[in-house]
Image 1 (cartoon, rainbow, N blue to C red):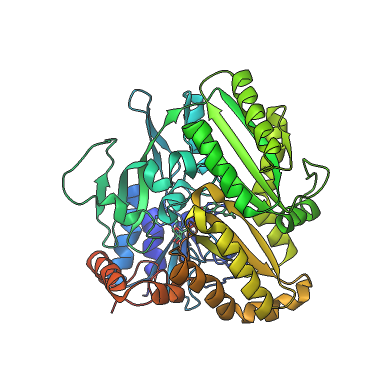
Image 2: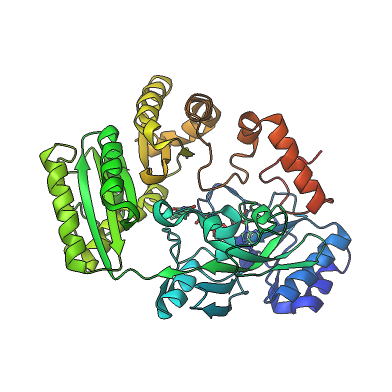
Length: 473
Ligand SMILES: Cc1cc2nc3c(=O)[nH]c(=O)nc-3n(C[C@H](O)[C@H](O)[C@H](O)COP(=O)(O)OP(=O)(O)OC[C@H]3O[C@@H](n4cnc5c(N)ncnc54)[C@H](O)[C@@H]3O)c2cc1C
């Protein structure tokens, strides 16, 4: 290993090789502060060629590599282990928008572009890049691709995977695979890009991508609605889909406990209604027509839902600023929980029809196992995806709760997977947090197929070791 740091410095410049503790610290812990690791160095290459150069050095010297984007991941995927042997390779300096093709409706961007920058570049060209999540000001497109991020518009536009046409990847050997094609049809064998999307940096470094663009909507109508229970929310979703089809672009569920935390911790947050509803739905429509017509259509729809009792109260945003206030209540849910203190987090999906059953059964079982537990549930109801987080109202008691995480996981994950046919990771990925859980819920054959892919692409096991799958043997 002697001289490795100097070789990195020669490859990408001394200022792009961080070794001082004060410089490396932000890269060695995760957004929630739950994981902490150590690293030989943090490398900040600025081009695909520089990424390839440092990866070749790592491959040659058997140095483990941990890719990192904006470091907003919620499963510890971008945090190195505590051996101090790995290098963190941050893609944050690969920040160019390479091309934007309005006729093909595609944008080609480098991995370190912030999601908000990609959205802005699309918007400047009169297009929409529809991936949208609360961390968009700090997460990178490379991280979004590597976690197959979801967010608030999956209902209409799909996950990051659905928005991707091509990738450029630096393989663990240092070779560059260029699959940067903007094609909507290409049946020439295995679709290799799909391997790297959602791989959480265990198979290679995504350095650039060709992404789909859509027409920018000219009208948006947003409502905050109060409901008595999740079954009413599922009924409302079906009615909204039947009435609005693709114009329904978001349908989010927020529990009273979630909204209460946001109101408590986020400065300026105010409930749109006079009370904090037991359950709220944030519903948004968008289309290319007139603002007035869309707002009228939503008003009429909500009026009918109030009449038949599906909805018990509601507020329709009267301006974009008010819509943004509604959205801030939903989007600050993770931040408010972070301020409140540590919690046990679940990111699950079940068929939309099973959401009420899940909430009922999980709630009852947890109340018995953990008397007094507070459940903070919210999420993308339209996708059957809930963030289902547990804490105790006494913040000091939460360390004891975290120690019993395995017990809580058993209740929630067994119900989700074994009984409701759902997934234990809907959109955040596996990382370190759910690596061992995966072995319980994936079949031995599925795990072996995953290990075969890993061995084929990363025979030395250098890419993000300890994440997603525990061992390749
Ligand atoms: C407030 C908040 C709200 C969130 N809301 C959502 C949400 O609604 N939906 C959702 O899906 N997620 C959400 N997340 C999680 C997170 O923002 C996403 O997982 C995001 O996609 C991570 O991007 P990043 O650039 O921060 O990646 P990082 O955290 O840096 O990395 C994530 C994983 O990808 C790997 N990786 C990063 N870049 C690359 C690359 N270029 N090549 C190969 N591997 C790479 C890392 O090794 C790691 O395993 C939220 C997070 C926060 C803090």
